[in-house]
Length: 214
Ligand SMILES: *[C@@H]1O[C@H](CO)[C@@H](O)[C@H](O)[C@H]1NC(C)=O
Image (tube, rainbow, N blue to C red; front, side, top):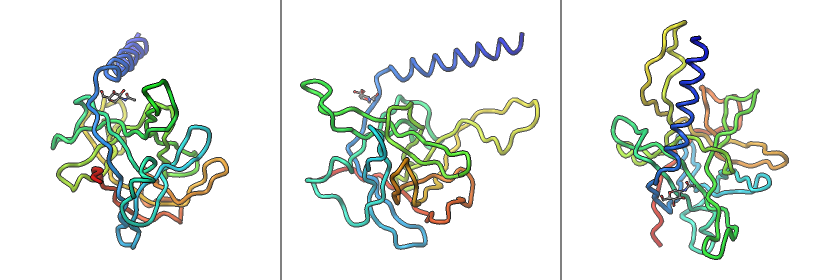
């Protein structure tokens, strides 16, 4: 009985998620994602790089602000629905890249959410743009608009049989690492779910939202 009730609750939760996703979202962008090394001289921008059919990694491109002619693969968008958010009001939502494909006469792009891809033998999740659901992220307005990831619970505090209280948890454990995507080997953004990252090529970075202003 309890198992059924739990199943129904999960279903209701999943359904409410679908409803939220269909509500009008607020979209901001385009903006760049500036990568700055923490304790290294890494300095550059995220660019979407081909990592499979209609899948792109978040590659590290060293150097200054992108110029307008190559901007498309450096520009990102952010959709929020008002909840969830950090205690300081910074919303969590979904990060998008616009894959340039002519969907119809007026829409020359497909918005692809950024979703973490996990590997069974790594604690470094690889963010990828594709056609999955998207991983909750946001920009911390009280911390220089740095990119964070968002979670409702913290499993490191769980106790047997005690229902965890939900809250808002944000993490900024970003790295630039050499990562392998079915044949492509790139220096790209990774997120360490625990520290230190087990990939020895990872270097700590922060990722900052910078609105496009040509
Ligand atoms: C993001 O929000 C905008 C504005 O509401 C909307 O037009 C767009 O379809 C949304 N994108 C996705 C992929 O949900």
